[in-house]
Length: 199
Image (cartoon, rainbow, N blue to C red; front, side, top):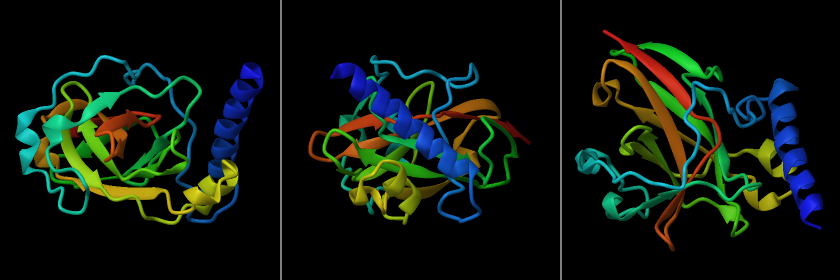
């Protein structure tokens, strides 16, 4: 039974990936499979302390009252909580961006263990978990609902804009997290992106 569950999980990831590669509909073009390339940091169970300078992030549209209380964690093996699909409309794992250009990130997120949408998505700088943005989960993603065979996920999309001034010049890895307001846990989404910020 466990093997069957693992196979189903792999098939689901593949189906989401295929949805991203086929068709020209706007909703399907943003979904990608998890990326385990060396340019992206792998999720770890250990969670560094949240950078307290993140208090400047607006969280008024979410249920996050105190970012320092959020518990960042790796997803359970075989579970897919969502994907950080694109940065500035590119699904490439690395991006060269001018410090004067806003960084638009988007993807989809769910609470796989509860069979529902994530309460919000937290976008962080990977090395210190500094919160860069918080996004509501409410954008139509029928491709995700179809690929995962779950109509509850039809509005699992999210998008946020990061102010490049909040990031250091040079290479920075960006991560996204599916947030559960009931447990104050943030589970890492698949696929990190690296941005190389230039003056």
